[in-house]
Length: 384
Image: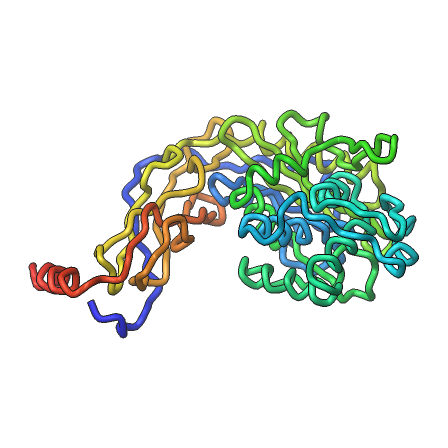
């Protein structure tokens, strides 16, 4: 197949016959007062509850999730060792030590990337965020450029970052709930070990003290393991949270809550409702090929596709609502294709609900076709 052939959006339907009753459960009353809320089941990509999911708003300290994600990407690439040391500058200490939540760092103090990330994820330390940003990239603008580059890669179209810690900046930093779920999903699926190491911790030992996390769900909601709160007078009380029970992983956002108690009640109720009122109907086990995608100019004509974990459809508990599946990708996909590269999506449609999408990855590498491969593929293409 010629590499110059135009690409097109391909949708491949998968046969599935699961039918039954309709009816969606009402969301918990605790979220009624929250201006922005969103609950997504990552195993199906389905939205279980949403209020203004695409509205841009001020994230406050939830900004630090993107700072952590950038660090995780650099660590995974081998460019940022956890033991790398950073020295607190005088200007940084003067501006940020004791400003909002902080580790009260002093000029000349040396900390590892590991300690800074614990401070960012658990304590929500503003000074730790700036020390990491300046120490790694040379400046805050250099770091925020990395944040925005990663946001673009992830398709976070309603978000922009102008600060590494979410301190008020006149609205230059903004996000949407849907974009935050996208970020959380990328962090959890791309960096599961780093996510477990730094997020979901209730406290951090520092300078002879135990500093507490503000997370309203960890240790309260079974399976909750993060992710990040945020608060300023401008933003209100925000939370990006997640919980896992068995094979199910839920991610939620509440934003603009009027009090810490209101944020906690809405967050806990939303997660509990997501597990109790909804059920997972298994589709594909972890690692099992979901489908194949056509390849252009490769040593193989197709590449098998797998998800990052178990795939299921989410339906109201006790329901047998009809389910349909299709694989969507831009293709044929040009070779070379690296194993693990995100190349497609599985769309899961449940009767009465907006379809969800689960990322699909290449299960194996496909190199560029050599002369013999091109000849064989050409001959195969001539067959009826």
